[in-house]
Amino acid sequence: MKKTFFSIFGIGAYLLIPLSVSAQKKDKKTAVKPNVIIILADDIGYGDLSCNGEPTVQTPHVEKLAAQGIRFTDAHAVAATSTPSRYSLLTGEYAWRRNDTGIATGDAGMIIKPEQTTIADIFKNAGYATGAIGKWHLGLGDKAGQQDWNGYITPGLKDIGFDYSYIMAATGDRVPCVFVENQRIVNLDPNDPIEVSYEKPFPGEPLGKDNPDMLYVQKPSTSHGHDQAIVNGISRIGYMKGGKSALWVDETIADSITSHAIEFIESNKDQPFFLYFATNDIHVPRVPHPRFTGKSGMGPRGDAILEFDWSVGQIMETLEKLGLTENTLIILTSDNGPVVDDGYADRAVELLGDHRPWGPFRGGKYSIFEAGTRVPFVVSWAGKTKEGVSDAPVSQIDLFASLTGLINGEIPANAAPDSQNQLSTLLGKDKKGRKYIVEQAGSLSISDGTWKYIAPGNGAAYDKLTNTELGNNKEPQLYNLKQDMGEKKNLAGENPKKVAELKAILEAEKAK
Ligand code: NG6
Ligand code: CA
Image (cartoon, rainbow, N blue to C red):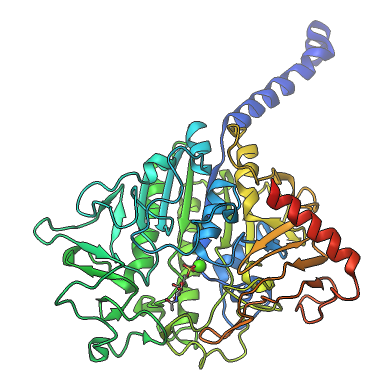
């Protein structure tokens, strides 16, 4: 038989069989578009996740994700606060190119304009289902204070590439304290319309600053700011009235957004999807579900980290259950560095113990020192990413072009001007990374992975309320991050050449 087979078809046919099988497999492989999930934490610092070497709070789900992917040690958010950071991630444009991307109020108009291209547009144009779930903080509607909160809020996320959205308009500490699903407030009773203002209080509505007795004892009361509308016994930034049936319950925010993320994944399991999952954890007010209360030994801040880890575990478990793990790329990161007291008396400072939310770095949220933007960053795609740790300089600004590269999408002219395709570094194929990382807080800085130059600025050097070294200085600063990752020794005086070189590159970047 064997002889006949070879004599009739020859060696070519012998090869043909395995060849055609593998060609088929390959076709199938290239036809399958990977799902992409960006998990964006809020205010989680480099040292807050146990995968980064701080053993004080255990985050096993993130550890598992990191163990099956790549953990980056020199990864940056573009800015040290939420709005500019998120703007940059979603548009691929440095937020500092615009002057309206500072921390947004809860009634800000939509900062990303419908005519702009977002990373969600790229996915949508490539045939993906797209969803944004969780914290938004990039404004809604046309103009500040002009939204139709009781009707269809437009423009909204549908106009910038997200087919589905289930969001908090701004932050947990800003009104309106409601979920907005596909541009309508969830559970709103038309007989109890909601009103929102950032200008003046509504007569008759109690405010935190005059009614400390109304703030629940078991929930954090304010330590600075946050003394306006009282919602669920917690006073917030901004004024609101009505909408009682629509108010979120702080303890179940994580449950609510996580279950919506799971539903989104389940309902799109048979087609490629892009999910932007932005947690409320661990932004203030930190009010995790009672099942996490007391579990970290560090009070609500530590408990909120555990809740974040739980959400990550839920997403991973869902993918596993649906058999999607191997076809889903997950990027886990944070919008900016950590802060301990961010305005609520939740005992975070007192209970911190040995925990270092900022890891080995200086500064924190709001700061131009490293901890402001050097954030946790894990890229995980089971079987596709090379497992390990990478010290390549990477930035969230590059997610736009890199993910476009991943799905063979197209970036229209003028879109994502600052984003570079860094896919091979992100997938662990090389450790090149970005030549320069630009960071934004009070001023701008630029780093090549070794040298970091901080442009002089007039801002305060220190913020007493949050106990943060902001890093601003009227003099230029230069640090050697390889030898001095804690940015203790300003070498600008002894290395004027390096200062001039990095300054020129930063100036050229600004002039683009
Ligand atoms: C600050 C708030 C802070 C936080 C931050 C934005 C006060 C006193 N402080 O103005 O609590 O909300 O804005 O944080 O109001 S971010 O992570 O969304 O950028
Ligand atoms: Ca933040």
